[in-house]
Image 1: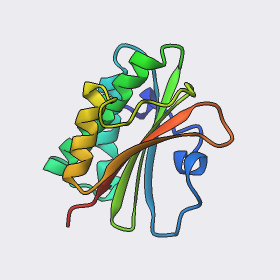
Image 2 (image 1 turned 180 degrees about the vertical axis):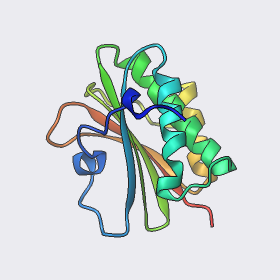
Image 3 (image 1 turned 180 degrees about the horizontal axis):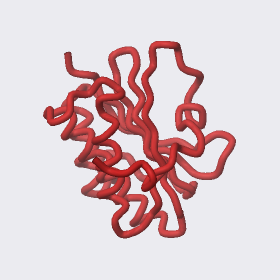
Image 4 (image 1 turned 90 degrees about the vertical axis):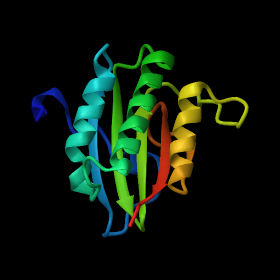
Length: 156
């Protein structure tokens, strides 16, 4: 188990930054991860620790897919937003879906067209598609930057 002192609660809910208010049956888990060489590992560990809080069975194929998506998205922040000191990683579950959101301070949106994605985003899109989901990105509201959102249908 990792110490909570290595992570902070998110500065602001990504859902608040990117989508409308939540109905009461939504579960949420969010951490802010400092962008450093070990950021991918730390984000993955923190999210693995929080999977149960949003109803994902640890060690399942679905949990592995979610963790791989988190790893790829945080790696993209390291690669494409080098001046971003912190990324917020959030899991939101409601209405039979899980949404992984990774927000950073870089306002440039990633290329998400079929022929435009890099290898990491292609993998993320394939994993989301396996669970009847998809990938998107939008500028955040009331703060600088963007959030990349990956939607999955929760397995039964």
